[in-house]
Image (cartoon, rainbow, N blue to C red; front, side, top):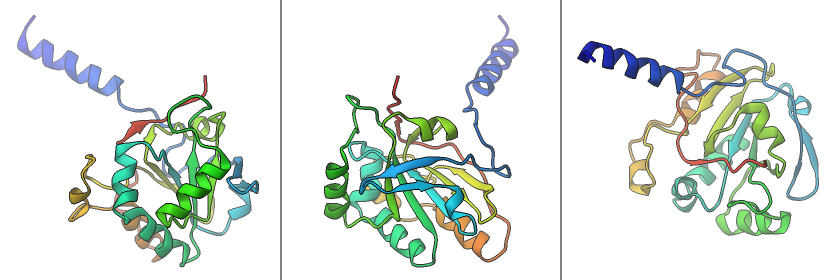
Length: 202
């Protein structure tokens, strides 16, 4: 087989394995209902008129730990919720799967990490994850006040587990919210998320 033919096949394979998006930036974000770690129910529709961040999380994932153990994601949660952004951490690990937590376990973790999301939604059936085709922990989705998805993908451009790599990283979440809240176009609407796979219910 010629070198050119091999390159063509490799390109086709690469394109075919790109992640498909259940909802693309610029389209309406799917509504959902979910119960948080305190037993309170939330829906996306109740937050119409506000910016909403969905952050898929798994406390045992080393990629997630990079952001939590460094305090980076907690500071972002505090910064944006102080500006009236709704921040929903979503945990979609199924019972028996790595990353599954009970409500009390999640509340203990949030307290230990000094985390400050609006709420932590427990999604043990992976229903919310399936709506968004969440792929990794972390995986970030940002929804504008009209209910439109304006960003999906990675937190930053350093797909490693090293806390040191946070310094100088391009933070896509901060860029998105800063631009959108100023009425400016979002610099990058979609990136490839990195991290541990979401442990879906079967």
